[in-house]
Image 1 (cartoon, rainbow over the protein chains, first blue to last red):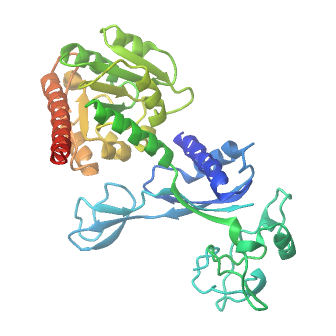
Image 2 (image 1 turned 120 degrees about the vertical axis):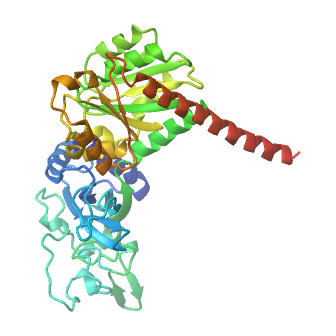
Image 3 (image 1 turned 90 degrees about the vertical axis):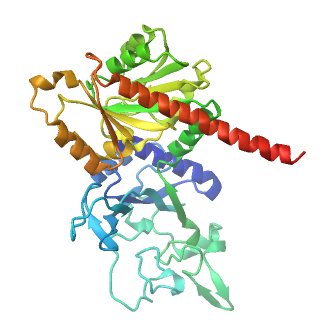
Length: 113
Length: 317
């Protein structure tokens, strides 16, 4: 559902950047998506193709870098892997953890012409 | 670093080739246009790049030597010129966040306390809201109603004598900050008051969209199951207050209140919980008190800001 809005957001960024970065066409969009970013990667791909139609990114490839969830455990004093926002430390069971990676939802780079 | 594959060894290569890598690996799907199926932009020979005026950033020359991969993009795939890799590093929801900031500044200027009410469909948001409005008439109040279709909810709010703006999102599953900004423009002066933004009934998407509100308030009804906070953690993580609604129905259900609160606190240890029923009135004083305290705190905060500003200006005299 909101993957559609996210794709519209991507196209909007591409259009805004086209003016300042002087390009007419986008061939590849490389984005980072964190595991905790509430985004379904398959849905994102599906929506992107639909939203990009008739835009400067029509037919563009979407490269998705999936970032795993990571959090800081105060008790172990180190970064641990998490798969859910509310996960406890897998090593010591400590809660709450401070999320350090996995919230990302950003455009990293573009291949343009 | 090589931005094509992420390896750290590709500082210099000649004529855009990848041959200079001392380690063996292959890009599964190289960026060059040659892999694209549109056919309109197959890998350009380097000569074409030079003729197309793109060469200015492609080459770093010393004498007769041309170095590719030393420009800002460090790119060195065949046919890929420097100017054609654009580093963006931009949040996809950045535009919404900018609108949200604008809304927040507007709310601050008016000392307006804005709440974003989020829940699944049928949790009793609108009934709770009409009861709240009827009992809380101490300041200007308005409601922005978000639904995919119909103006039913706004009409229910207007029946209480309060101004309501209905935003129909069409196929959209959430309100965004831009829509709220437009709706705000239609509201009367709300200085020092409360703005309730009733989001589209959906426990998923509205979590990701900041509207500029002071707090998100998640409404969960006891007919929905106590594990909802674990099933939809993002929403309960984003909310500062959970209203556990329809508690008058508890005697007829197997709903475990303690378990539900534990689930919510697990997702968000800071979340406050009020058990409430719009029908029986249970928990209403606590909820109204919560609104009043936060509304007053907001005005006091504004007074403190303005006094500081005034003293600073007086010191300049």
